[in-house]
Length: 495
Image (cartoon, rainbow, N blue to C red; front, side, top):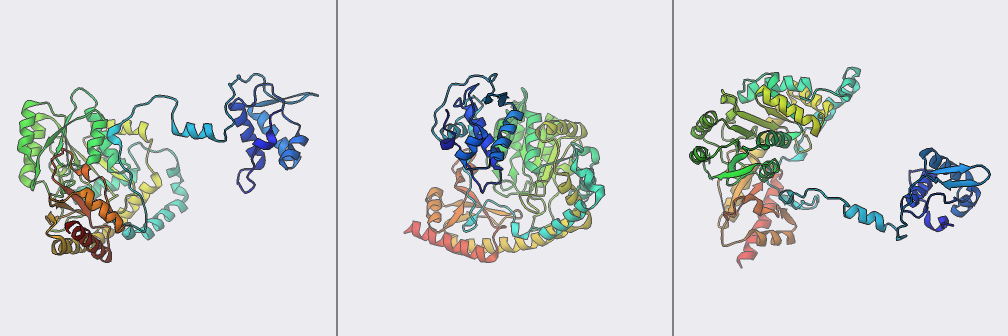
């Protein structure tokens, strides 16, 4: 008889009932072929003695196995593995060996996407980290979010938010954003032009899938560009064409030359603060780009990821504010304003495109978090988001000024940079006699971490030796410490 006593292990501190633990393990023995069809199970009295449990526990386990169709009771004979089950070749008794292997290696084929492989950043609160430009989560208006969220969930009226709702997103948030974006971005949109997404990344993905998944699939991006957008458009089947980026942003004359020779389906641009270099697309090039879009009938995917954080003057209105012919797909969100975990974004485009994007979104993610979206709408209406944005703007400007001043004073011989007019990061060029791999390895010894995948900023392998230094998520004390450690690192390399 199968050695139940030696092979069933019970965890008495486990929240799962003992009879279910027994049931689970017997099912596992059946699935592995160790208990074949028609095999007899020990009596409830015998198994209860072997496992040192109450007989009622065994009876409950057997009843569950019967209910699930694994075993059957034959009158005056006992309890048996159901004879109708398929015969399975017996597998090794090696404890957890099969389970471990099945969790490591798939027994089926699937598509591998090497272009999506990235080294994961380890999250360690003890590390001092230079990111590539993210908000300071410590500044997030947690109390306001929690208060608004509680007020919504306490009202019976809002229980409807727990059900299925529009694939376009929460209605109140869409209405609120129409007014908010028309006022702050100079847009001229209606409810028909907006789709709520889970952050700007979803908007970028939807746009790429709809634009590039056909025979005309060329998309223009900068020679330096947001790597995730490259991956997104490649995944959609896009062929990427790169154009130079200088102090005035994308070179639209080069774009025009490409359009004269090739059919272009779309252009991706971070017009306000180019990612990664932070430069702003000039007014002249903005007008030229819109003219080219009209003439050559391509879409402009405008990723306005950090519109609210511009320090030298008021934020520059997006291309979408001057789109008179329906060429611009404008995407933005609240992850940079509040925190990355606030996965609420929006896509603005002509109605026919929004309708198609909503239908595609339905099969990716039926809808967003309706309660969170309602919370965001209430916070915009109450002015909480606007007040937080103004507060964060002042803090980040102070941090930018301090970071750039210390970087120039202490490390000017090693790094070349321009003070960014906005955003949350500085584009830093390392003197070419030094190597980022060396800097990064030295930094780890001093418990200082920044993006080890620095090469991802060099999309066209030009060897510019640039990287983004985020300052927004560091307070003033941390900025001083980061510069201090960087100074020690560079001096040790220079010795």
